[in-house]
Amino acid sequence: MIRAYTGTAVRRSEAPLLAAGRGGELMQRAAYGLYAAAAASLTARRGRIYGSSVTVLAGSGNNGGDALYAAARLARRGAAATAVLTSAAAHPEALAAFRAQGGKTLALTESNAAAVSGAALAADAVLDGVLGTGGSGGLRGPARILAEALNTARLQGKAPLVVACDLPSGVDADSGRVAGTCLQADLTVTFGAVKTGLLAGPGAAAAGEIRCIDIGLGPHLGTPDAYRLQAEDLAGLLPVPTPADQKYSRGVLGVAAGSETYPGAALMAAGAALATGVGMLRYLGPATVARLINLAHPEAVCSSDAVADIHVQAWVAGPGAGKDEDQRRRARDAMASGLPAVIDADAIGVVAPGLHPAVILTPHAGELTALLRSLGEDADRAEIEADPIRYARLAAARTGATVLLKGWATLAAAPTGELYSQAEATPWLATAGSGDTLSGILGALLATDRTPDSERGPGHYARLAAAAAHLHGRAGTLAAADGPVQPSLLEPRIRAIVANLTKQSHRKFK
Ligand SMILES: NC(=O)C1=CN([C@@H]2O[C@H](COP(=O)(O)OP(=O)(O)OC[C@H]3O[C@@H](n4cnc5c(N)ncnc54)[C@H](OP(=O)(O)O)[C@@H]3O)[C@@H](O)[C@H]2O)[C@@H](O)CC1
Ligand SMILES: [K+]
Image 1 (spheres, rainbow, N blue to C red):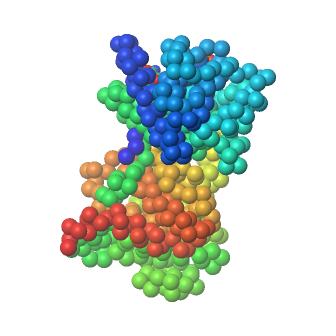
Image 2: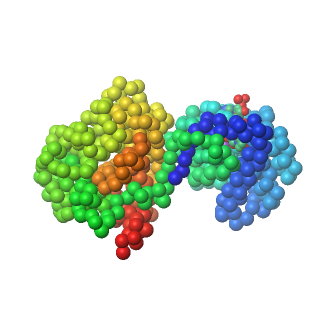
Image 3: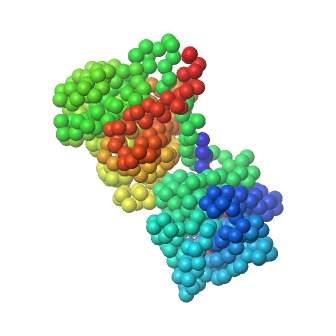
Protein backbone atom coordinates (compact mmCIF):
# COMPACT_ATOMS: atom_id res chain seq x y z
CA MET A 1 0.00 0.00 0.00
CA ILE A 2 1.28 3.44 -0.84
CA ARG A 3 0.52 5.97 1.88
CA ALA A 4 0.49 9.56 0.70
CA TYR A 5 0.73 12.78 2.66
CA THR A 6 0.16 16.36 1.67
CA GLY A 7 3.25 18.49 1.12
CA THR A 8 2.09 20.55 4.08
CA ALA A 9 2.05 17.47 6.34
CA VAL A 10 5.51 16.40 5.18
CA ARG A 11 6.91 19.86 5.90
CA ARG A 12 5.27 19.78 9.32
CA SER A 13 6.85 16.41 10.06
CA GLU A 14 10.28 17.70 9.00
CA ALA A 15 10.06 20.65 11.37
CA PRO A 16 11.20 18.90 14.58
CA LEU A 17 14.15 17.36 12.75
CA LEU A 18 15.13 20.72 11.29
CA ALA A 19 14.83 22.28 14.75
CA ALA A 20 17.20 19.59 16.01
CA GLY A 21 19.74 20.68 13.39
CA ARG A 22 19.31 17.61 11.20
CA GLY A 23 18.33 19.44 7.98
CA GLY A 24 21.68 18.76 6.31
CA GLU A 25 21.45 15.05 7.06
CA LEU A 26 17.91 14.87 5.58
CA MET A 27 19.07 16.64 2.46
CA GLN A 28 22.01 14.27 2.01
CA ARG A 29 19.68 11.25 2.25
CA ALA A 30 17.31 12.82 -0.25
CA ALA A 31 20.12 13.75 -2.63
CA TYR A 32 21.64 10.29 -2.47
CA GLY A 33 18.29 8.70 -3.26
CA LEU A 34 17.80 11.03 -6.19
CA TYR A 35 21.30 10.34 -7.47
CA ALA A 36 20.89 6.55 -7.19
CA ALA A 37 17.52 6.53 -8.98
CA ALA A 38 18.74 8.91 -11.73
CA ALA A 39 21.95 6.88 -12.15
CA ALA A 40 19.97 3.64 -12.56
CA SER A 41 17.62 5.16 -15.13
CA LEU A 42 20.46 6.78 -17.02
CA THR A 43 22.41 3.53 -17.07
CA ALA A 44 19.33 1.67 -18.32
CA ARG A 45 19.03 4.15 -21.19
CA ARG A 46 22.67 4.75 -22.10
CA GLY A 47 24.52 1.78 -20.73
CA ARG A 48 26.76 3.93 -18.52
CA ILE A 49 27.02 7.24 -16.71
CA TYR A 50 30.57 8.11 -17.71
CA GLY A 51 30.43 10.38 -20.76
CA SER A 52 26.74 11.21 -20.40
CA SER A 53 25.44 14.76 -20.22
CA VAL A 54 23.21 15.91 -17.37
CA THR A 55 21.42 19.23 -16.97
CA VAL A 56 20.22 20.14 -13.51
CA LEU A 57 17.54 22.82 -13.18
CA ALA A 58 18.09 24.42 -9.79
CA GLY A 59 15.71 26.84 -8.09
CA SER A 60 16.40 28.98 -5.05
CA GLY A 61 15.30 26.54 -2.36
CA ASN A 62 16.21 23.20 -0.86
CA ASN A 63 14.69 21.39 -3.83
CA GLY A 64 17.47 22.91 -5.95
CA GLY A 65 19.92 21.90 -3.20
CA ASP A 66 18.87 18.24 -3.44
CA ALA A 67 19.22 18.28 -7.21
CA LEU A 68 22.65 19.98 -7.15
CA TYR A 69 24.05 17.48 -4.65
CA ALA A 70 22.69 14.59 -6.74
CA ALA A 71 24.18 16.07 -9.92
CA ALA A 72 27.53 16.50 -8.12
CA ARG A 73 27.54 12.73 -7.53
CA LEU A 74 26.76 12.07 -11.20
CA ALA A 75 29.59 14.44 -12.17
CA ARG A 76 31.92 12.48 -9.90
CA ARG A 77 31.09 9.38 -11.94
CA GLY A 78 32.08 11.10 -15.16
CA ALA A 79 28.89 12.82 -16.34
CA ALA A 80 29.28 16.26 -17.91
CA ALA A 81 26.96 18.29 -15.69
CA THR A 82 25.53 21.76 -16.23
CA ALA A 83 23.40 23.59 -13.68
CA VAL A 84 20.79 25.98 -15.02
CA LEU A 85 20.05 28.38 -12.16
CA THR A 86 16.44 29.49 -12.47
CA SER A 87 16.67 32.09 -9.70
CA ALA A 88 19.22 34.70 -8.58
CA ALA A 89 19.85 32.58 -5.47
CA ALA A 90 20.83 28.91 -5.18
CA HIS A 91 21.56 26.63 -2.22
CA PRO A 92 25.14 27.79 -1.50
CA GLU A 93 26.68 24.58 -0.08
CA ALA A 94 25.11 22.38 -2.75
CA LEU A 95 26.26 24.75 -5.48
CA ALA A 96 29.80 24.68 -4.08
CA ALA A 97 29.74 20.85 -3.97
CA PHE A 98 28.50 20.76 -7.56
CA ARG A 99 31.24 23.14 -8.77
CA ALA A 100 33.85 21.17 -6.83
CA GLN A 101 33.03 18.14 -9.05
CA GLY A 102 33.58 20.21 -12.20
CA GLY A 103 29.93 21.12 -12.75
CA LYS A 104 29.33 24.20 -14.92
CA THR A 105 26.66 26.79 -14.12
CA LEU A 106 24.67 29.32 -16.08
CA ALA A 107 21.93 31.70 -15.07
CA LEU A 108 18.61 31.35 -16.89
CA THR A 109 17.17 34.61 -18.23
CA GLU A 110 14.33 35.60 -20.55
CA SER A 111 16.88 36.31 -23.29
CA ASN A 112 18.80 33.02 -23.12
CA ALA A 113 15.79 30.73 -22.34
CA ALA A 114 15.45 29.50 -25.94
CA ALA A 115 19.15 28.67 -26.29
CA VAL A 116 19.28 27.01 -22.86
CA SER A 117 16.19 24.96 -23.77
CA GLY A 118 18.00 23.72 -26.87
CA ALA A 119 20.98 22.63 -24.76
CA ALA A 120 18.73 20.94 -22.17
CA LEU A 121 16.96 19.03 -24.94
CA ALA A 122 20.29 17.68 -26.13
CA ALA A 123 21.23 16.36 -22.66
CA ASP A 124 20.84 12.69 -21.77
CA ALA A 125 19.07 13.53 -18.54
CA VAL A 126 17.48 16.52 -16.83
CA LEU A 127 17.18 16.70 -13.03
CA ASP A 128 14.29 18.99 -12.14
CA GLY A 129 15.02 20.86 -8.92
CA VAL A 130 13.23 24.13 -9.65
CA LEU A 131 10.41 23.82 -7.10
CA GLY A 132 9.49 21.30 -4.43
CA THR A 133 7.12 21.47 -1.52
CA GLY A 134 7.94 25.15 -1.00
CA GLY A 135 6.63 26.11 -4.45
CA SER A 136 3.35 27.87 -4.99
CA GLY A 137 1.72 28.27 -8.37
CA GLY A 138 3.03 27.00 -11.69
CA LEU A 139 6.41 27.71 -13.24
CA ARG A 140 6.99 31.31 -14.14
CA GLY A 141 9.16 33.32 -16.53
CA PRO A 142 12.09 31.63 -18.27
CA ALA A 143 11.66 28.41 -16.24
CA ARG A 144 8.26 28.12 -17.84
CA ILE A 145 9.73 28.55 -21.35
CA LEU A 146 12.24 25.80 -20.61
CA ALA A 147 9.57 23.45 -19.23
CA GLU A 148 7.31 24.03 -22.22
CA ALA A 149 10.16 23.20 -24.63
CA LEU A 150 10.86 19.95 -22.77
CA ASN A 151 7.15 19.06 -22.57
CA THR A 152 6.70 19.64 -26.30
CA ALA A 153 9.72 17.48 -27.08
CA ARG A 154 8.23 14.74 -24.87
CA LEU A 155 5.06 14.70 -26.96
CA GLN A 156 7.24 14.19 -30.02
CA GLY A 157 9.23 11.42 -28.32
CA LYS A 158 12.41 13.53 -28.39
CA ALA A 159 12.80 14.54 -24.75
CA PRO A 160 15.74 13.53 -22.56
CA LEU A 161 15.13 11.49 -19.42
CA VAL A 162 13.49 13.88 -16.97
CA VAL A 163 13.82 13.03 -13.28
CA ALA A 164 11.77 15.20 -10.93
CA CYS A 165 13.27 15.98 -7.55
CA ASP A 166 10.53 15.42 -4.92
CA LEU A 167 7.77 16.44 -7.37
CA PRO A 168 7.51 17.79 -10.90
CA SER A 169 8.10 21.54 -10.58
CA GLY A 170 4.82 23.42 -10.81
CA VAL A 171 2.68 20.65 -9.26
CA ASP A 172 0.89 21.51 -6.02
CA ALA A 173 2.07 18.92 -3.51
CA ASP A 174 -1.22 18.91 -1.59
CA SER A 175 -3.68 18.47 -4.45
CA GLY A 176 -1.95 17.66 -7.76
CA ARG A 177 -3.22 20.93 -9.17
CA VAL A 178 -1.05 22.69 -11.78
CA ALA A 179 -1.57 26.43 -12.08
CA GLY A 180 -0.20 27.06 -15.56
CA THR A 181 2.81 24.93 -16.46
CA CYS A 182 4.68 22.08 -14.79
CA LEU A 183 7.61 20.03 -16.07
CA GLN A 184 6.51 16.51 -17.08
CA ALA A 185 8.76 13.76 -15.74
CA ASP A 186 9.61 10.15 -16.56
CA LEU A 187 10.45 9.46 -12.95
CA THR A 188 9.69 11.31 -9.72
CA VAL A 189 11.94 10.60 -6.77
CA THR A 190 10.04 11.83 -3.75
CA PHE A 191 11.39 12.22 -0.23
CA GLY A 192 10.08 11.16 3.16
CA ALA A 193 6.65 10.17 1.83
CA VAL A 194 4.72 10.12 -1.42
CA LYS A 195 2.93 13.46 -1.75
CA THR A 196 -0.82 13.41 -2.38
CA GLY A 197 -0.25 15.71 -5.36
CA LEU A 198 1.57 12.88 -7.16
CA LEU A 199 -1.51 10.65 -7.03
CA ALA A 200 -4.24 12.81 -8.50
CA GLY A 201 -5.12 15.18 -11.30
CA PRO A 202 -2.46 16.81 -13.47
CA GLY A 203 0.21 16.01 -10.84
CA ALA A 204 -0.38 12.28 -11.31
CA ALA A 205 -0.14 12.62 -15.07
CA ALA A 206 3.12 14.61 -14.78
CA ALA A 207 4.90 12.39 -12.25
CA GLY A 208 5.68 9.33 -14.37
CA GLU A 209 7.01 6.46 -12.27
CA ILE A 210 7.13 7.32 -8.55
CA ARG A 211 9.89 6.23 -6.21
CA CYS A 212 9.90 7.16 -2.53
CA ILE A 213 13.11 7.61 -0.55
CA ASP A 214 12.93 7.06 3.19
CA ILE A 215 14.70 9.97 4.87
CA GLY A 216 13.60 9.03 8.38
CA LEU A 217 10.36 11.00 8.78
CA GLY A 218 8.37 7.85 9.62
CA PRO A 219 7.40 8.43 13.24
CA HIS A 220 6.60 12.10 12.57
CA LEU A 221 4.22 11.63 9.64
CA GLY A 222 0.89 10.81 11.33
CA THR A 223 -2.22 9.71 9.45
CA PRO A 224 -1.95 9.49 5.66
CA ASP A 225 -4.02 11.78 3.49
CA ALA A 226 -4.52 9.21 0.69
CA TYR A 227 -3.71 5.61 -0.23
CA ARG A 228 -2.94 3.56 -3.33
CA LEU A 229 -3.52 -0.20 -3.26
CA GLN A 230 -0.78 -2.42 -4.59
CA ALA A 231 -1.31 -5.94 -5.95
CA GLU A 232 -0.46 -7.51 -2.57
CA ASP A 233 -3.23 -5.52 -0.89
CA LEU A 234 -5.88 -7.06 -3.12
CA ALA A 235 -5.65 -10.73 -2.18
CA GLY A 236 -7.73 -10.28 0.99
CA LEU A 237 -10.40 -8.32 -0.87
CA LEU A 238 -11.05 -10.86 -3.63
CA PRO A 239 -13.73 -13.50 -3.51
CA VAL A 240 -12.24 -16.94 -2.89
CA PRO A 241 -14.77 -19.71 -2.16
CA THR A 242 -14.10 -22.14 0.68
CA PRO A 243 -15.06 -25.84 0.73
CA ALA A 244 -18.03 -24.93 2.96
CA ASP A 245 -19.50 -22.57 0.38
CA GLN A 246 -22.48 -22.98 -1.89
CA LYS A 247 -23.68 -20.53 -4.53
CA TYR A 248 -25.78 -18.42 -2.15
CA SER A 249 -23.18 -18.18 0.57
CA ARG A 250 -20.58 -17.03 -1.94
CA GLY A 251 -22.69 -13.98 -2.75
CA VAL A 252 -25.46 -13.13 -5.19
CA LEU A 253 -25.18 -10.01 -7.31
CA GLY A 254 -28.22 -8.31 -8.79
CA VAL A 255 -27.61 -6.44 -12.05
CA ALA A 256 -30.25 -3.95 -13.19
CA ALA A 257 -28.45 -2.62 -16.25
CA GLY A 258 -29.05 -2.17 -19.97
CA SER A 259 -32.15 -1.22 -21.90
CA GLU A 260 -33.63 -1.83 -25.35
CA THR A 261 -31.42 1.05 -26.53
CA TYR A 262 -28.21 0.01 -24.75
CA PRO A 263 -28.21 -3.78 -24.27
CA GLY A 264 -24.41 -4.01 -24.52
CA ALA A 265 -23.87 -2.29 -21.17
CA ALA A 266 -25.75 -5.07 -19.41
CA LEU A 267 -23.76 -7.75 -21.22
CA MET A 268 -20.45 -6.16 -20.27
CA ALA A 269 -21.36 -5.47 -16.63
CA ALA A 270 -22.64 -9.04 -16.20
CA GLY A 271 -19.65 -10.55 -17.98
CA ALA A 272 -17.14 -8.62 -15.87
CA ALA A 273 -18.95 -9.57 -12.65
CA LEU A 274 -18.96 -13.26 -13.58
CA ALA A 275 -15.27 -13.10 -14.49
CA THR A 276 -14.47 -11.53 -11.10
CA GLY A 277 -16.38 -14.36 -9.43
CA VAL A 278 -19.85 -14.43 -7.81
CA GLY A 279 -22.00 -17.26 -6.47
CA MET A 280 -24.88 -16.22 -8.69
CA LEU A 281 -25.77 -13.33 -10.95
CA ARG A 282 -29.39 -12.26 -11.17
CA TYR A 283 -30.27 -9.96 -14.03
CA LEU A 284 -33.28 -7.65 -14.00
CA GLY A 285 -34.32 -5.85 -17.19
CA PRO A 286 -36.25 -5.97 -20.46
CA ALA A 287 -36.93 -9.46 -21.87
CA THR A 288 -34.99 -8.73 -25.06
CA VAL A 289 -31.86 -7.84 -23.07
CA ALA A 290 -32.38 -10.82 -20.76
CA ARG A 291 -32.35 -13.09 -23.78
CA LEU A 292 -29.02 -11.66 -24.95
CA ILE A 293 -27.59 -12.01 -21.45
CA ASN A 294 -28.60 -15.66 -21.37
CA LEU A 295 -27.05 -16.33 -24.74
CA ALA A 296 -23.75 -14.73 -23.70
CA HIS A 297 -23.83 -15.91 -20.06
CA PRO A 298 -26.10 -18.96 -19.66
CA GLU A 299 -25.31 -19.07 -15.92
CA ALA A 300 -27.10 -15.75 -15.28
CA VAL A 301 -30.62 -15.97 -13.84
CA CYS A 302 -32.81 -13.42 -15.60
CA SER A 303 -36.21 -11.90 -14.88
CA SER A 304 -38.10 -8.65 -15.10
CA ASP A 305 -38.79 -8.55 -11.34
CA ALA A 306 -38.62 -5.50 -9.14
CA VAL A 307 -35.65 -4.95 -6.82
CA ALA A 308 -37.74 -5.81 -3.75
CA ASP A 309 -38.75 -9.18 -5.23
CA ILE A 310 -35.33 -10.82 -5.24
CA HIS A 311 -32.73 -11.62 -2.63
CA VAL A 312 -29.18 -10.50 -3.37
CA GLN A 313 -26.14 -9.28 -1.41
CA ALA A 314 -25.39 -6.28 -3.66
CA TRP A 315 -26.59 -4.39 -6.71
CA VAL A 316 -25.22 -2.91 -9.89
CA ALA A 317 -27.67 -0.43 -11.37
CA GLY A 318 -27.54 2.16 -14.07
CA PRO A 319 -25.13 1.11 -16.84
CA GLY A 320 -26.98 1.50 -20.14
CA ALA A 321 -30.29 2.30 -18.42
CA GLY A 322 -30.79 5.27 -20.73
CA LYS A 323 -34.37 6.53 -20.48
CA ASP A 324 -35.80 3.13 -19.50
CA GLU A 325 -38.13 4.07 -16.63
CA ASP A 326 -38.21 0.54 -15.17
CA GLN A 327 -34.41 0.46 -14.93
CA ARG A 328 -34.28 3.94 -13.41
CA ARG A 329 -36.81 2.86 -10.80
CA ARG A 330 -34.71 -0.23 -10.06
CA ALA A 331 -31.68 2.03 -9.59
CA ARG A 332 -33.60 4.20 -7.11
CA ASP A 333 -34.82 1.09 -5.29
CA ALA A 334 -31.32 -0.41 -5.20
CA MET A 335 -30.01 2.83 -3.64
CA ALA A 336 -32.78 2.71 -1.05
CA SER A 337 -32.44 -1.04 -0.37
CA GLY A 338 -29.83 -0.63 2.36
CA LEU A 339 -27.59 -3.08 0.48
CA PRO A 340 -24.25 -2.26 -1.12
CA ALA A 341 -24.95 -0.89 -4.61
CA VAL A 342 -22.89 0.38 -7.54
CA ILE A 343 -24.75 3.25 -9.14
CA ASP A 344 -23.39 4.11 -12.57
CA ALA A 345 -24.05 6.21 -15.66
CA ASP A 346 -27.64 7.40 -16.17
CA ALA A 347 -28.63 6.34 -12.65
CA ILE A 348 -26.23 8.93 -11.20
CA GLY A 349 -28.75 11.51 -12.41
CA VAL A 350 -31.36 10.21 -9.93
CA VAL A 351 -29.09 10.47 -6.88
CA ALA A 352 -30.29 12.45 -3.86
CA PRO A 353 -28.44 13.21 -0.59
CA GLY A 354 -28.89 10.93 2.42
CA LEU A 355 -27.16 7.83 1.01
CA HIS A 356 -24.83 5.51 2.92
CA PRO A 357 -21.17 4.62 2.20
CA ALA A 358 -22.04 1.18 0.77
CA VAL A 359 -23.68 2.99 -2.14
CA ILE A 360 -20.88 3.64 -4.61
CA LEU A 361 -21.43 6.27 -7.28
CA THR A 362 -19.12 5.88 -10.27
CA PRO A 363 -19.14 9.12 -12.26
CA HIS A 364 -16.59 10.46 -14.73
CA ALA A 365 -15.83 14.17 -14.48
CA GLY A 366 -18.79 15.15 -16.69
CA GLU A 367 -21.29 13.13 -14.65
CA LEU A 368 -19.81 14.47 -11.42
CA THR A 369 -20.30 18.03 -12.70
CA ALA A 370 -24.00 17.34 -13.28
CA LEU A 371 -24.36 15.59 -9.92
CA LEU A 372 -22.73 18.43 -7.96
CA ARG A 373 -24.78 21.03 -9.79
CA SER A 374 -27.96 19.12 -8.99
CA LEU A 375 -26.91 19.40 -5.33
CA GLY A 376 -26.47 23.16 -5.68
CA GLU A 377 -22.66 23.14 -5.83
CA ASP A 378 -20.75 25.42 -8.15
CA ALA A 379 -18.73 22.96 -10.26
CA ASP A 380 -17.48 22.77 -13.80
CA ARG A 381 -15.74 19.95 -15.57
CA ALA A 382 -12.40 21.71 -16.06
CA GLU A 383 -12.24 22.56 -12.33
CA ILE A 384 -13.01 18.96 -11.41
CA GLU A 385 -10.30 17.68 -13.74
CA ALA A 386 -7.83 20.23 -12.29
CA ASP A 387 -8.53 19.30 -8.66
CA PRO A 388 -10.34 15.94 -8.62
CA ILE A 389 -9.58 15.08 -4.98
CA ARG A 390 -11.44 18.11 -3.75
CA TYR A 391 -14.56 17.36 -5.80
CA ALA A 392 -14.60 13.60 -5.18
CA ARG A 393 -14.48 14.29 -1.44
CA LEU A 394 -17.11 17.01 -1.76
CA ALA A 395 -19.52 14.74 -3.66
CA ALA A 396 -19.04 11.93 -1.13
CA ALA A 397 -19.63 14.30 1.78
CA ARG A 398 -22.73 15.83 0.16
CA THR A 399 -24.40 12.56 -0.84
CA GLY A 400 -23.23 10.32 2.02
CA ALA A 401 -22.19 7.77 -0.63
CA THR A 402 -18.74 6.57 -1.65
CA VAL A 403 -17.63 8.23 -4.90
CA LEU A 404 -15.44 6.52 -7.50
CA LEU A 405 -14.34 9.31 -9.82
CA LYS A 406 -13.04 7.78 -13.04
CA GLY A 407 -10.10 9.37 -14.78
CA TRP A 408 -6.42 8.97 -15.64
CA ALA A 409 -5.95 8.26 -11.96
CA THR A 410 -9.24 6.93 -10.59
CA LEU A 411 -10.15 8.21 -7.12
CA ALA A 412 -12.33 6.56 -4.50
CA ALA A 413 -13.54 8.90 -1.76
CA ALA A 414 -15.49 7.96 1.36
CA PRO A 415 -18.00 10.41 2.83
CA THR A 416 -15.70 10.73 5.85
CA GLY A 417 -12.80 11.78 3.58
CA GLU A 418 -10.71 8.59 3.24
CA LEU A 419 -9.27 8.61 -0.25
CA TYR A 420 -7.69 6.04 -2.59
CA SER A 421 -6.10 6.73 -5.96
CA GLN A 422 -5.42 3.98 -8.51
CA ALA A 423 -3.42 4.50 -11.70
CA GLU A 424 -3.03 1.02 -13.20
CA ALA A 425 -5.18 1.87 -16.20
CA THR A 426 -4.04 2.53 -19.73
CA PRO A 427 -5.38 5.43 -21.80
CA TRP A 428 -6.70 2.70 -24.14
CA LEU A 429 -9.40 2.09 -21.52
CA ALA A 430 -10.90 5.50 -22.30
CA THR A 431 -13.51 3.92 -24.53
CA ALA A 432 -17.26 3.22 -24.47
CA GLY A 433 -18.08 0.19 -22.35
CA SER A 434 -15.16 0.61 -19.99
CA GLY A 435 -17.35 1.93 -17.15
CA ASP A 436 -19.79 -0.97 -17.57
CA THR A 437 -17.02 -3.51 -16.98
CA LEU A 438 -15.75 -1.54 -13.96
CA SER A 439 -19.28 -1.59 -12.49
CA GLY A 440 -19.48 -5.35 -12.91
CA ILE A 441 -16.11 -5.94 -11.21
CA LEU A 442 -17.05 -3.69 -8.30
CA GLY A 443 -20.49 -5.28 -7.98
CA ALA A 444 -18.85 -8.71 -7.66
CA LEU A 445 -16.49 -7.44 -4.95
CA LEU A 446 -19.46 -5.99 -3.01
CA ALA A 447 -21.60 -9.12 -3.34
CA THR A 448 -18.83 -11.44 -2.15
CA ASP A 449 -17.34 -9.18 0.52
CA ARG A 450 -16.74 -11.17 3.69
CA THR A 451 -15.12 -8.51 5.82
CA PRO A 452 -16.55 -8.79 9.33
CA ASP A 453 -18.58 -5.73 10.36
CA SER A 454 -16.11 -5.00 13.13
CA GLU A 455 -13.34 -4.57 10.54
CA ARG A 456 -15.29 -2.31 8.17
CA GLY A 457 -13.75 1.05 8.92
CA PRO A 458 -15.20 4.25 7.46
CA GLY A 459 -13.10 3.87 4.31
CA HIS A 460 -14.07 0.23 3.69
CA TYR A 461 -16.18 0.81 0.59
CA ALA A 462 -13.68 3.27 -0.85
CA ARG A 463 -11.07 0.53 -0.48
CA LEU A 464 -13.27 -1.99 -2.32
CA ALA A 465 -13.91 0.58 -5.05
CA ALA A 466 -10.15 1.16 -5.33
CA ALA A 467 -9.60 -2.61 -5.56
CA ALA A 468 -12.08 -2.77 -8.45
CA ALA A 469 -10.30 0.12 -10.20
CA HIS A 470 -6.98 -1.69 -9.72
CA LEU A 471 -8.31 -4.94 -11.25
CA HIS A 472 -10.00 -3.10 -14.09
CA GLY A 473 -6.92 -1.01 -14.85
CA ARG A 474 -4.65 -4.03 -14.89
CA ALA A 475 -7.05 -6.01 -17.09
CA GLY A 476 -7.11 -3.10 -19.54
CA THR A 477 -3.34 -2.73 -19.51
CA LEU A 478 -2.91 -6.46 -20.18
CA ALA A 479 -5.39 -6.28 -23.04
CA ALA A 480 -3.73 -3.19 -24.51
CA ALA A 481 -0.57 -5.19 -25.11
CA ASP A 482 -2.47 -6.82 -28.00
CA GLY A 483 -3.86 -3.56 -29.43
CA PRO A 484 -6.78 -1.21 -28.81
CA VAL A 485 -8.90 -2.33 -25.85
CA GLN A 486 -12.41 -3.67 -26.45
CA PRO A 487 -14.18 -3.76 -23.05
CA SER A 488 -16.40 -6.67 -24.16
CA LEU A 489 -13.22 -8.76 -24.49
CA LEU A 490 -11.82 -7.98 -21.03
CA GLU A 491 -13.36 -10.99 -19.29
CA PRO A 492 -10.47 -13.44 -19.81
CA ARG A 493 -8.01 -10.79 -18.61
CA ILE A 494 -10.04 -10.14 -15.46
CA ARG A 495 -10.24 -13.85 -14.80
CA ALA A 496 -6.48 -14.26 -15.28
CA ILE A 497 -5.68 -11.45 -12.86
CA VAL A 498 -8.09 -12.77 -10.23
CA ALA A 499 -6.54 -16.23 -10.63
CA ASN A 500 -3.08 -14.80 -10.19
CA LEU A 501 -3.95 -12.71 -7.15
CA THR A 502 -5.77 -15.54 -5.37
CA LYS A 503 -3.21 -18.29 -6.12
CA GLN A 504 -2.10 -18.55 -2.49
CA SER A 505 -5.68 -18.92 -1.27
CA HIS A 506 -6.46 -21.67 -3.79
CA ARG A 507 -3.49 -23.68 -2.61
CA LYS A 508 -4.89 -23.73 0.90
CA PHE A 509 -7.87 -25.79 -0.27
CA LYS A 510 -6.07 -28.37 -2.40
N1 LIG B 1 13.00 20.76 4.68
C1 LIG B 1 13.76 19.66 4.74
O1 LIG B 1 14.20 19.24 5.78
C2 LIG B 1 14.07 18.92 3.53
C3 LIG B 1 13.62 19.39 2.31
N2 LIG B 1 13.93 18.76 1.22
C4 LIG B 1 13.71 19.38 -0.07
O2 LIG B 1 13.36 20.70 0.08
C5 LIG B 1 12.23 21.01 -0.70
C6 LIG B 1 11.51 22.15 -0.11
O3 LIG B 1 12.45 23.19 -0.08
P1 LIG B 1 12.08 24.71 0.17
O4 LIG B 1 11.21 24.82 1.33
O5 LIG B 1 13.35 25.43 0.25
O6 LIG B 1 11.22 25.10 -1.09
P2 LIG B 1 11.51 24.80 -2.65
O7 LIG B 1 10.35 24.01 -3.09
O8 LIG B 1 12.85 24.29 -2.91
O9 LIG B 1 11.58 26.22 -3.34
C7 LIG B 1 10.68 27.17 -3.17
C8 LIG B 1 11.45 28.45 -3.40
O10 LIG B 1 11.12 28.89 -4.67
C9 LIG B 1 10.43 30.13 -4.58
N3 LIG B 1 9.14 29.94 -5.28
C10 LIG B 1 7.96 29.54 -4.79
N4 LIG B 1 7.06 29.39 -5.77
C11 LIG B 1 7.68 29.73 -6.92
C12 LIG B 1 7.27 29.77 -8.28
N5 LIG B 1 6.01 29.43 -8.66
N6 LIG B 1 8.18 30.12 -9.21
C13 LIG B 1 9.44 30.45 -8.84
N7 LIG B 1 9.87 30.44 -7.54
C14 LIG B 1 9.01 30.08 -6.60
C15 LIG B 1 10.30 30.46 -3.12
O11 LIG B 1 10.90 31.66 -2.91
P3 LIG B 1 10.00 32.92 -2.59
O12 LIG B 1 9.27 33.19 -3.89
O13 LIG B 1 9.06 32.54 -1.48
O14 LIG B 1 11.00 33.93 -2.25
C16 LIG B 1 11.07 29.37 -2.38
O15 LIG B 1 12.26 29.85 -1.82
C17 LIG B 1 11.48 19.72 -0.77
O16 LIG B 1 10.61 19.66 -1.88
C18 LIG B 1 12.61 18.74 -0.87
O17 LIG B 1 13.05 18.65 -2.21
C19 LIG B 1 14.74 17.55 1.24
O18 LIG B 1 16.06 17.96 1.04
C20 LIG B 1 14.64 16.82 2.54
C21 LIG B 1 14.86 17.68 3.66
K1 LIG C 1 11.11 19.58 -8.52
